[in-house]
Picture 1 (tube, helix red, strand yellow):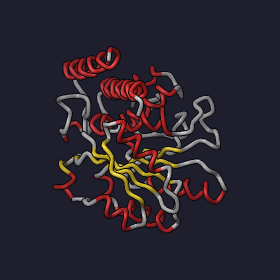
Picture 2 (cartoon, helix red, strand yellow):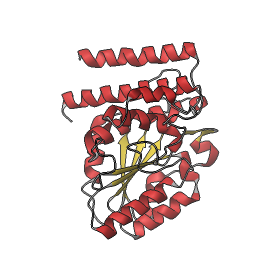
Picture 3 (cartoon, one colour):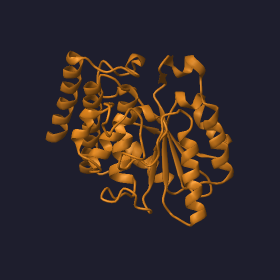
Picture 4 (cartoon, one colour):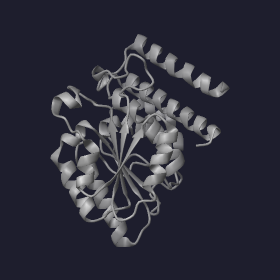
Length: 281
């Protein structure tokens, strides 16, 4: 990937991370850890990969995204705000009664949200339905869905994987955020889902392994995904929970906990320092 473009995506991802902290700190609740681990992916999808029109959120020919791990919506909301679907000031109302941005994505009230989600395991099934609808309607748009690795412990995920493979939904691209941490600890200790790639391959999927925090790796992976025909694609991305904030990284305790004032200042300071470095490179 060209260096100038890569740096711009890194800056967008950094701003998404800042939005995650702002939203969860304002609400004093939410899920920062897994939101930070998908910030680079959302930056790539919304600003490089997906065919979208923020001025027309319901445009029929748009690509769709289903955030199956819906509790990580602070990152999605910030990405949507960055893209221009709504004003960034909405982030300060996160999880507040009467506000637009609630604790899980709501397709009825939030511009740019294609599917309400949050019940783990169900998002990929909705994505399968969308992809099949496109096939039956002769449409060319793609459907992307982001799952957590702990979410793969839900049996419905594998029913959907079997369906997608059988129906040859090559317009469906799943992303597994493999940070190996869930609310109770390491995924490999709670109930191992490994080997992830082999399991999806057994259901007829094309698998791609990527580094979630390397835009060259993401770029290569998503470009490869667009070349695959006759089967759905899954990108298994190795990520770091809490990425970008030193005391949150690889710490399961930050799965669903907001920062206090001191922690917020430290975290934002780290992200702003990293942003400043990107501006002078």
